[in-house]
Image (tube, rainbow, N blue to C red; front, side, top):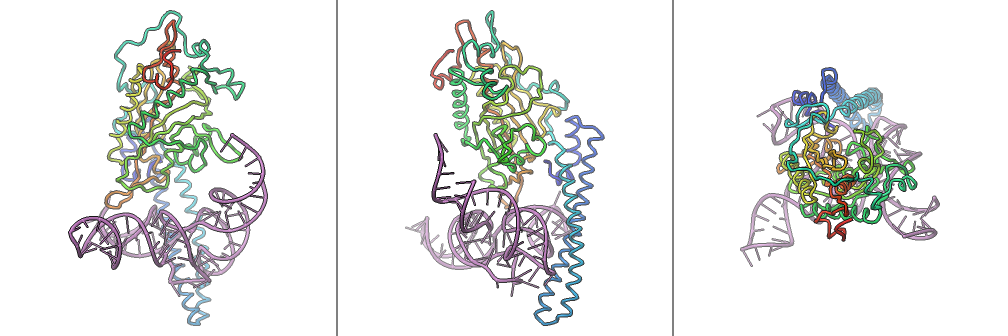
Amino acid sequence: MLQVKVIREEKQRILNGLRKRGWTGKQLNVIDRIIEVDDDRRKTQKELDDTLAESNRMAKSIGQLMGQGKKDEAEAMKAQVTTLKTQSKALEEQLGAIVAQLDELLYSVPNCPHRSVPKGKTADDNRVAKDWKQPFPSLHEGALPHWDLAKKYNLFDFELGVKLTGSGFPVYRGKGARLQRALIQFFLDEAVKAGYEEILPPHLVNEDTARGTGQLPDKEAQMYKCDLDNLYLIPTAEVPVTNILRDEIVPVKELPLRMTAYTPCFRREAGAWGAHVRGLNRVHQFDKVEIVQIEHPDNSYKSLQGMVRHVEKLMKKLELPYRILLLCGGDMGFAAAKTFDFEVWSAAQERWLEVSSVSNFETFQSNRMKLRFRDENGKIELAHTLNGSALALARIVAAILENNQTPEGIHIPKVLHKYTGFKTI
RNA sequence: GGAUGGGUGGGUGAGUGGCUGAAACCAACGGUUUGCUAAACCGUCGUACGGGGUUAACUCGUACCGCGGGUUCGAAUCCCGCCCCAUCCGCCA
């Protein structure tokens, strides 16, 4: 969530930012409302503190009076403290209600887009930051979409997944499974080479962790929950990995922290953006290698570029036609300040598939999870958090299969040969 | 699942209901000493919110000893509920 301090001090910037997300007059009133409620919070806080201070002073005197044997005076004071106590109780309750109200308002405000983010409402307003200039792969007569290729070569099986679990849980097998594992290995190796520490986190997280990255309270419906134990299946490695630093104050010289993790990702959401939900385009469980950075605010945008370049390199090595989009305000996620999406051309479906999303969240996440750093002067500040997929597997597999198919079989990109152990399917 | 023991500052670990935001030690940081390193010595060394102050240094107030409630004029300390952790047993990859 945004910091109240920032909302107060940079109100115009925030308002302008929210307009880029398509917010209009009425919605924008929240900002003024937040400032109002915060004023109220401060006032009440002060009143409460003063009351408590007075009662603390008296309690101390009572101790002294008792010591001196001045019983009557002590008793009189006790009565006064009791009155103060009643007052402070009421104030405390009042303050609690105000803070709850303030939090609710703050939770409803998305991150303020960076000044370089274009205005816009939908995906149509996204800006192509880097287009694919070469021709797309031309497929032979009778080329198939990946779900048919999967059948033909027995790579993964959706019906079997339904039998074991339900729809949206593909079963990979044979070379399909092997390809999956090869990609994971490749992505992790590349990330480690680029200076990211490999993490293998738990795939279940508790409530505090889910709250830290903002899955709770609002996006509860997106996650699978184990009710008996009050744990959630992670929707992305970002959740456990970023939370490693929750409630920590890291020395500035340790920044940036770079971490990478492979995990399966579990997503309940059925609501489809885009009607094309066949095959691997949209599933409840998929594999992903994530990269995460914790950065100094001064360097976070440079790091964002670095992450974009890293993902770009993966695309090139996999020999996939890709383009990079700079998302407009309206299409960005709630928590992001700036996001680049990577899309891969899926030749048989003849459409772009989103395979990576790289974002700078600035202090939106770190504020919530109290992830801070101590600068050279000992001052404590919120760190910036960034993350990106490098990469999401299911759709990459779809693209590789479709783009590389020939009548004789499917070619595996060269970089993967040492991981797959085969060159064609 | 059963039994027991625990949760105090970056770590270890004291703490009789008021003088404890919290001893001591370690780590860290600054300094003195030193041919270098080490040792020794001196000093600093929690966070959040709020007030004052030039959104400076600083200063004052409040809260926080797992979380939430209660008793009391006053709670780290007493009482209740919850959560978590460790160890042993059972089960198991």
